[in-house]
Length: 569
Length: 60
Image (cartoon, rainbow over all chains, first blue to last red; front, side, top):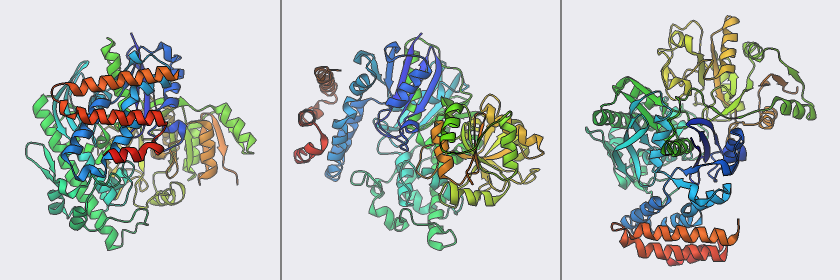
C-alpha cells in the first residue's frame, strides 16, 4: 500500500502522475497550469494539483519517481560526444551546460520542490517508464511492448515482454539509430517545429504520393530482421540541435521549406514537400511494422502495447492493427514524454508491492472546471450565462444549428488529445466547417484534418472498423464508409481516413450524452472534435481558461458543466 | 530548505556520480566527469549559467 508520485520533465512536456495503492488517481501536464505549450519545467503545479486531488500532502508520499536516469543520460552524452569528435565540439558545451544546470541534480531538485526527503526520490529508465505507462494500464495480462522515441538515456527503441506485474527487456536499439530522430529531422526539413510539428507531417502525408522511396531508402534502410539503420551522413545531430538534418539531406531532397510560409498544395513546390511527407510516412510505418513483427517473434505474445512519442503516429498504429499479426493493440493517450510520469509512478508502486492498476478506460485524469467560477467571471465580464437542465441536449441542438461549441466537462484529459472533456465541437458533415475552423479558430494549415468522435455502438455504421483498444483514445485511424447514412465531410481526411474516437459512457460520459442527443434529433451520432486551444496554446484547463478562449476565438458558445456562456454579439 | 542542505545534497549526488563512473566500464570517462563537476561547482559559486558560460566554453 503506497502513495507514489511520478514526474517527467526538463526535456519536453513535463507531467506528474499520482498512483495510490495501485490506483491511478491523477495525471496532469504542467502546460495546463503554466499555459506554456509543452512546458518542460519541473512540474510543480501539476505535482501539487495531483496531490490535492488525492487529498495528500507531500509528506504522505512513500516515493517520488523520476522518469529518467540522470547519470546514464550524462554517460551517453559524453560517449556520443567522444565518438562524434570533432563534429560534436559545437554542440558539446550546450549539452553539458544543460546537464550541469539542472538535469544532473534533478532528483535533488525534486526533493526540494516537494519538500520530501531525498531518500524517497528515485529514478527509473526512460524507456522502462514508457513501457510501464502502456502495459500496466492496458487490458492485457501478457503482451509485447514496443517503446519508440527520439532517445531516452542511451536507447531509442526497446522491445519488452510484459507479463502480469513485470516488464522484461528483450531487445534495444542504441542512439543515434533512432526513428524519432529521423521523423523529427524530416519534420524540421518540411518547415515544421520539432517536437510539435510531427502531427503536421503526418497530416501532410495524405496529400502526397510516396514517389521518393528510392531516396528515402538511402536515409533509412529497413532490414528483413525488423531492424533499421539510419545513414548518419544525412543528419547533423552533433552540430545542429534545432534541425537535426545536414546539408546532404538537402542535396538529396531539395532545400528545407521555409518555416511558417503559407501552404498551397496546388503549387508544385509544396506538392513536392507533400510527396516527401508521404514517402517518409510510408517508410516510418514499415519500420514500425518490422519492429512489431520482431517483437512478436521474440516474445511470442499475441497483444502489443506501444509507447513513446513515435507511438502517437495514428496512421502507423492503424497499419500495425491490420498487418502486424497481433490480435490486439493498445496505445494510451499520453504516449509521449508526459506519459513517462505515469509509467514512473506505476513502477514505483509495483516495487512497493502494490498491484498493477486497472485498465485505463478514460483519459480524464486532470482537474475539473468549476461552473461557479465560470458564472462569476462571465458576469464580471458582462457575458450572458444560463444554467442548463440538460447540457448534452442543448449542445446537440447548438451543433445542429451549425454552431461551434467549446465543451468543458469534468476533469481535463491527460495527453495531447481532447477526448470530450476540453473539446471544441462542431457538425461533422460539411468540409466548409473544416476550412472555417482551420482558418479562423485554430489558425493552422489548411491541409490539416479534424477528428470525429462517434458513439461506440454506431462506429461500424460510419467507419470500416469496430471499436478496439486504441479507438477510445484517438490513437489510430479508420476508413470512413462510403455508404454511411450521413455525410462526414468535415472529419474525413484526403486519404479517406479519420483519426476517430469511439465514445462510451465510461470513457467520456458528457460527450456520450451529446452524441445520444444528436441521435435523438435524427442526426449522425458523430461530432467533429478538436482540442480546445488556439494556435500555440495549451489545451484549456480551468473555467477562466475557457472563458478566455471564448472571448479570443471565433466560437459561438461555451458549455461548461451545466452553464451556457454565450459569445457577446 | 537551507542552502547548506541543498549544497549537501548536491555533494552527495556528485559523489554518487563519481562512483557511477568509477565502475570498471566507465573509468575512462572519470577525468572528464571531474572537470565537469568542477565546472558545476563554478556554476554554484558564481550563482548562474549566464555568467559562467564562457568559462565552460573555454574548458571544452
